[in-house]
Image 1 (spheres, rainbow, N blue to C red):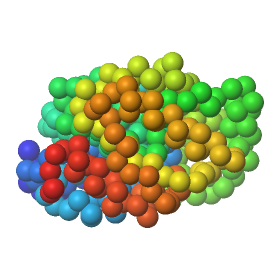
Image 2 (image 1 turned 135 degrees about the vertical axis):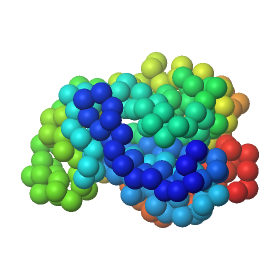
Image 3 (image 1 turned 45 degrees about the vertical axis):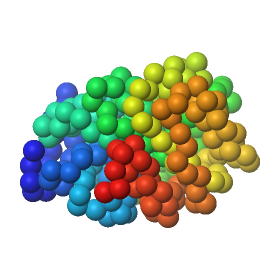
Image 4 (image 1 turned 180 degrees about the vertical axis):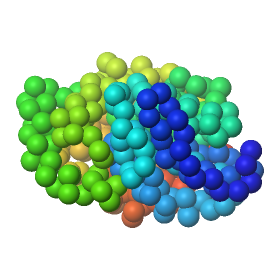
Length: 262
């Protein structure tokens, strides 16, 4: 245990991850970012929970200003990177919280580690739904090619990843395969610790019509099958703004799974 905040690089495989650990004796919480987001997205949730908790954030491979590039951006690696960060900080058990892509990572990690996960919070992600087909793959690749120039311009700020447009598209396509009901359903059914969903309303970047709401509707069957999982809140903000506008609901869910009012 460390009693002071630590910020530094954690070597993992062929790269290193930028990590911040607030330290202290509080319950550890590790936060997993959206697919192309950075650890700064969690600042409102962390401020809401306060210093009674030990907050560990990090930027995934190729994200942020400092985390290094890698030869492996696979989903499986993102799950094992949670272990690497916790081990580097000397933490054995923690609440895992993830948003969007990070929610899928959080669910997988909690499912695999019932003896280490104190609880899991999935924010706008980890819904078992077959949204990926050939047409969607083409749409994803087209979308990332279109945004490639803007991504390149913002890259020096750390606000966009250092992955190529093709790599970003492949990460998103792989997520579609991870999300399929046949793949994600068994992962969620195996979660043996307290878990909560926080879901938004409305659409997200790249979605059309009621796509997002149809995906969210898949959670009803999840909660019916596994009594450890509940929907903590459905909030007014959309997928992209939930950590900025409804961080209070996320913090509440963390407290719920940890069984504390802290």
